Length: 264
Image (cartoon, rainbow, N blue to C red; front, side, top):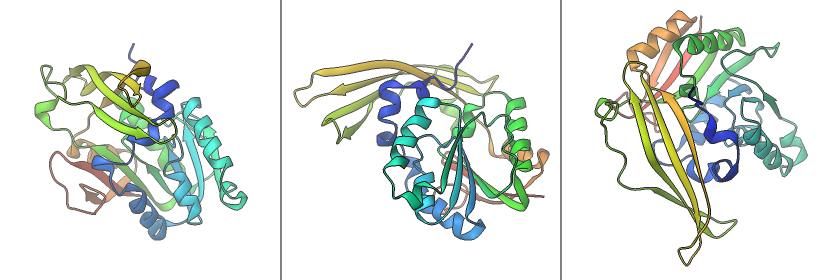
């Protein structure tokens, strides 16, 4: 049985999560979501809140954010970050452990955000539909859903698609180490539209010695644009904008799928 969320269970992967997040195709996403708050309202639900990388800037801008995540280790890290904020800002963030595939918070929101491709960790279509219907119930009439996916490049979805030639490396200012993340194995299942990857993380000191290492995995379901539009329609949404990056570029094959949909 595939665990699509093993990566978020703890250890080096969670501790260094923020160092890898937010760059590359996600460049500019925090400012984009701040702009969404100005458009859609200040009462926000973030699903897959993770380390509160998005929730904290929204709260700093005056939003009230409820953040839901399945991974307790991510929520624990988020709570430590929130505890260091000014009390008035920290009070605007409420963390809840839960599964975005099926949840009931007993209230509605102005808008919902699912950042950093978190929706794609729902690897079964039935769970995707259940999640979207739960989101619809949690939006006020006319409320908005903002969701980020990767747009699959089909040559990388084939079973024999090659692994990346280079590992990703980031600098950890806390430990002074380089953190290297390498994809060491990948299984593409075109029938299920599923990619499963095994990853190795290493903390490397200035002399090149590996001080810590771990292996972990994740899985994501890829979704084509037309398929996503049908999913939204099926679950009570109407897509009002599609973008391919956080600079508001028009949809482009192989870039991000950034959807803004309204509950109808």
